[in-house]
Image 1 (spheres, helix red, strand yellow):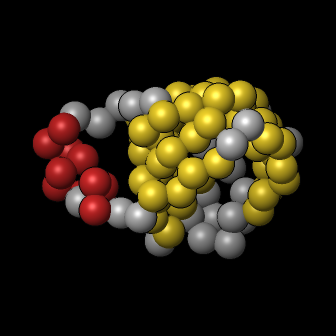
Image 2 (spheres, helix red, strand yellow):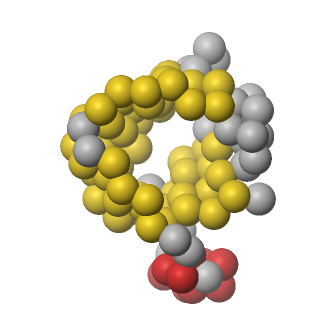
Length: 88
């Protein structure tokens, strides 16, 4: 169960309608999270480290991230985050 980090083109983002998704923001913090649905998101601002029992990943502004359903993790927000997100 791995987190995927992608770099999508403007055309790919437009095709998926990413810029019309809701926006979530978070200040510098640490918290545990469990995904009850798959989440896809595009980071607009910020830097994050996410630790799971399988891996530690880091992502930042411009990254398109996919979190699998059922994932349990710990978020460490190093710089305030703003992201478009969608649950599937």
